[in-house]
Figure 1: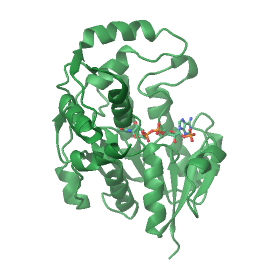
Figure 2: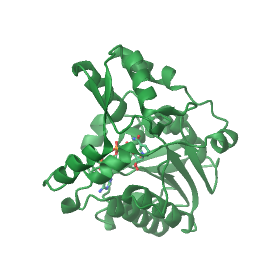
Figure 3: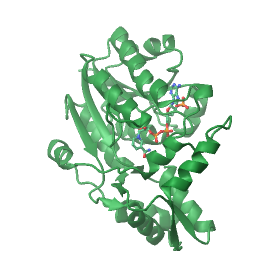
Length: 304
Ligand SMILES: NC(=O)c1ccc[n+]([C@@H]2O[C@H](COP(=O)([O-])OP(=O)(O)OC[C@H]3O[C@@H](n4cnc5c(N)ncnc54)[C@H](OP(=O)(O)O)[C@@H]3O)[C@@H](O)[C@H]2O)c1
């Protein structure tokens, strides 16, 4: 039988690169990265046999062409600056998270793609008042009702040697004498190593988790403060923590979101102070994965 062709929308991003590497190493699939900038993506992910194809969800016509001949699509698209929206540039949860999924479903059907794998988020909920969680929830529903075979993963915070968040926190600890944690520090997080997520996606490509939705987090549920302790231990940069009240952050966010290029918004504050807990039991039963504890998974911080 011919090897499956797997198209990775967002394959040039942090999670996408890990999945491309894992799929390419499996030797049993052909990997196609969909990107707005194939030359740049190739320079970041030069893997033998991986194909790079121009595609932009803002130009739906580019999608069906890019998906021709593919069996599976994995969607990991996210707008620049996430989770701070920039409506002036059309960078919103509704347009990119939800609208992007709808455009990819239409293109997948036109191109004859049979399987849709989606990287959603732990708090996805179509009834949420928060635009990010609502858009992911609506995107999930569109996939379930598409008639395509699907698997949906709902990660908590994803980390790894090339991530922005945990590396960003470790970088800030290196230079700041004290560190300000957003909110109470008691918000729940369950960080998952990107390689564990990539391993599950690879299994899903071969049929595991068919038509299912799975939370995916690490084995340990912790508070944001506890995660900061692990990052400080792993990086060797121990600093006193203090807490920035959510109300103050929202006030600052309300001012900054008016700028042409907002760096903070009220919704982004809610996003980082929300709980991100997972029920990982169904994932473990279906995928048989040994999830990596954060203290082991974050050991790379000590080598930076
Ligand atoms: N990272 C986490 O902790 C985490 C946790 C839970 C859920 N997630 C979800 O996982 C997914 C991937 O996250 P990530 O951290 O890997 O994101 P990322 O590194 O920011 O990558 C985003 C990707 O989206 C692509 N993209 C952006 N706009 C596009 C457009 N208009 N058309 C086509 N492609 C576009 C980019 O490709 P080009 O620039 O090459 O076009 C890039 O490959 C997202 O949906 C995110 O919400 C992430």
